[in-house]
Length: 185
Image (cartoon, rainbow, N blue to C red):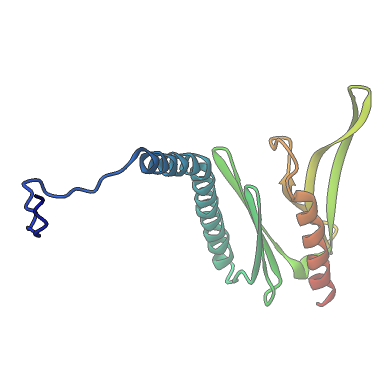
C-alpha cells in the first residue's frame, strides 16, 4: 500500500542556480556583443576626447595671446589644427595654429585693416586622364590701410596638410564676418 503522507524534504545539498545550454549561449552572445561593441566604439570615444582636449588647449593658447593685448575672445572656431578668434569690442582677430613641433600665433588689429579676403591658391593637374584641381594654400589675407605696412596672412591650409577639411568654408565665413566688422568702424 502506498503511503501518501507529506514529509518535509531535507536535502544535504544547497540549491544552486542552474543554467541550461540555452541560457549559457545567450550569456555568451551578450558578452561577445559587448566586447565587439567596445572594440568598435572605443577608438571613436578616445579620438573624440583627444580632439576635445586638443581644442581646449588651443583655445587656452588663443585666450592667452588675446590677454597680452588686453582683449577677450568673444567668438572662435576650430578647424583641424588651428583656431581663429575675434574680440568684437576691441576689433582684434587672433589666430593660433599647431604644427608638428611648433606653433604659430598671430593677431590683427582691425582698425588698421582696409579689407580681409579669403585666398585660395590652386594647382591644376591631370590624374588618370582627368583634370584635377588641388589646393596649395588657403588663407585669410588682411590688407592694411597704410600701404607701407605689409599684408598679414593667416594660413588655414598649407602644403603640410594632407587634405582640405573645412578650411574653405572657414575662410569664406571668417572673411565675411571680418569684413563686416571692418565696415562698422
